[in-house]
Length: 288
Ligand SMILES: C[S@@+](CC[C@H](N)C(=O)[O-])C[C@H]1O[C@@H](n2cnc3c(N)ncnc32)[C@H](O)[C@@H]1O
Image 1 (cartoon, helix red, strand yellow):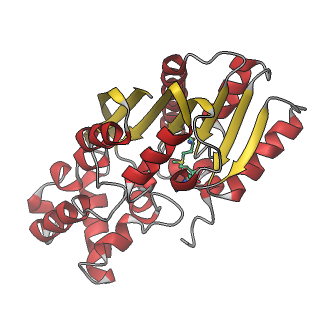
Image 2: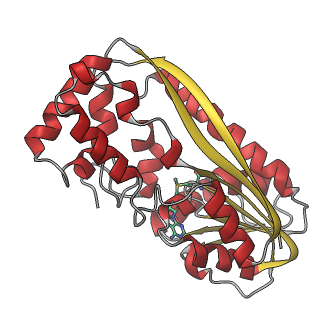
């Protein structure tokens, strides 16, 4: 567990915004709400249905589903980690909500529900944290009723802009070595963050039994001016509480002093410059 992020709740509330300006945090929040709304449009939730938010975290999807059902159906808040469920329970209690939900502590690979019992499975950015995606997708298929739907969003990190693409070799010591290391990191088949893309997900869904799953690739382009200290935050914050940070990943290839020098070269080169980034993700809409 990283010493700068103790659990998922802390990551969702603090670390995911690391290195962002207040304007960027506002943009990220708006983007999260927009992603949530697309998933919920796909899901077409009805009041009587059983809906599960798999890897619910702080409840981005589940709370909206509860609102749509007006607490008259059943929304299952499910997560592998208890801190997330405790956080959601606190919000539910504070809002005085007593009906229409269930809390379920289990991993996506072993969902503690009988087969064919769920109308809609919702999920955002969970498979990206699961190394072996096929058993997880098979399990979602198992709990869905025939005609039930999986509506999800996952980032496709391996085709995002890489550091070496926005750097100038003339300003970065050991540029070629870091480029090679970054490419290797991004192509590691054992790293849950980057061992998949839209094609492998589609194959996983078809193998599980989903008929003609829709897997829509979305490419988002963004531009902003790099601020002082931003680079350090990008490098030291982990992508999840139990995964190494970018700095730690590079330290598998170089000693700490070399990585620190790279970080300061990147910071010096990028500070004050406008960078253009490409970020990929997929929306999934799959019927059992
Ligand atoms: C990036 S967060 C997304 C949280 C929430 N879905 C959202 O959209 O804000 C990833 C979530 O997946 C959960 N998670 C990670 N591995 C999991 C697994 N194997 N099974 C179930 N949940 C998992 C984490 O606890 C965390 O809540």
